[in-house]
Length: 218
Ligand SMILES: CCCCCCCCCCCCCC(=O)SCCNC(=O)CCNC(=O)[C@H](O)C(C)(C)COP(=O)(O)OP(=O)(O)OC[C@H]1O[C@@H](n2cnc3c(N)ncnc32)[C@H](O)[C@@H]1OP(=O)(O)O
Image (tube, rainbow, N blue to C red; front, side):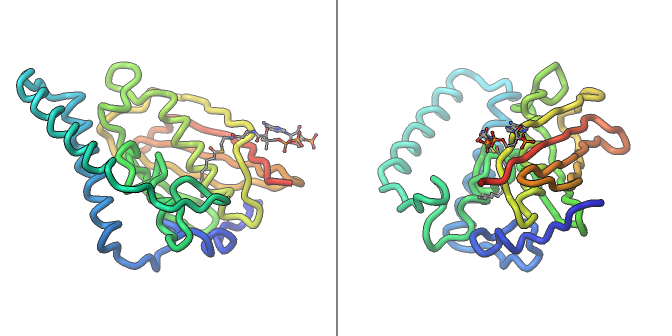
């Protein structure tokens, strides 16, 4: 028996990426996402391109200037009870700056989520910056994807919690530069414990599986 996922408990606080009614993002959030996307591309080029030293120096100088420029602005007012990234009026922030799904966070692959009944589905592609064994995704990055995927699934129950235990079984190496798909569901809830399972595939190939136990707050 799978537990229902509907997200109503969370949607009052966050604009869920699984919410099909999400309005087109414009203005400051659109620019944040664009900047993050360009930074992702910079990271990819840094890790693969055979760039001459002089161009690397020039790029570093440009980015140093940019970092100083962005850092000159005051920090956004933070909503203490929720998150570093969240603000009182902004439903985008926590999700949009997530390290795994955040479109405004350049370190996210990003993992793209959709809700399909009681199954949470994800799609992503690991670039070179996520390489572990040659040509393959780093196991820690795969674990991070599962933590987000299972964590997000259990957040859509009426009883969201934190990861207690996450167990990954790496079946075969997960390729880089390949469209990957993954899925997660909440198997059962027992008291404060939420048991979740997930799988990651490259095409038809099962690359890794995960079991997670999440603990709802007291
Ligand atoms: C707010 C919502 C935000 C939503 C964001 C949108 C989605 C974002 C998605 C992001 C997702 C990212 C997600 C993240 O990254 S979450 C970040 C990673 N996780 C953490 O940092 C958690 C750190 N650990 C703790 O806070 C505590 O140890 C917890 C809360 C886990 C338990 O401490 P607590 O004091 O509460 O526990 P208890 O002693 O009363 O024991 C109670 C029961 O539980 C059993 N037990 C205990 N520990 C574990 C364990 N580790 N595994 C399995 N079982 C465990 C224990 O045997 C007992 O069972 P029983 O004897 O009753 O049978």
